[in-house]
Length: 132
Image 1 (cartoon, rainbow, N blue to C red):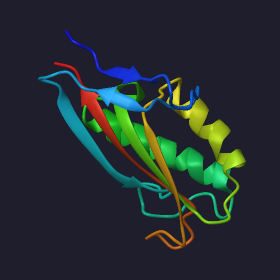
Image 2: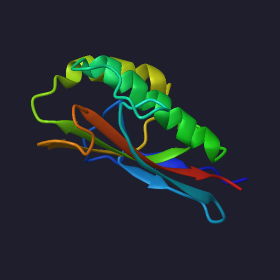
Image 3: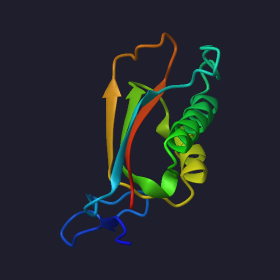
């Protein structure tokens, strides 16, 4: 069974937090996770203005979405992280690092003026690949 390869090519910044390239083997199942923000199963925003608490809920939602497809963080091949301008990412990063348990997919990060859920500070969408 071929596994997804996550690459850190020479000549690009070397970070322990992410890779630059994901190569998905033929026959893998691709899973797309829509934007997850800090709402619970009832649609209530969790964490108020605490970005660490919101990140915890976002990661919980990501785990639930991945599990629904039979995947886990080890199957991530791409993540997009949107965060509201002015948010202190240094408070969010340690929470995300624990919840991602060493997964280092390529990541896109962007500061935005606001998100679709009023009061949300962070949103994550992702792509995973499950080898066949």
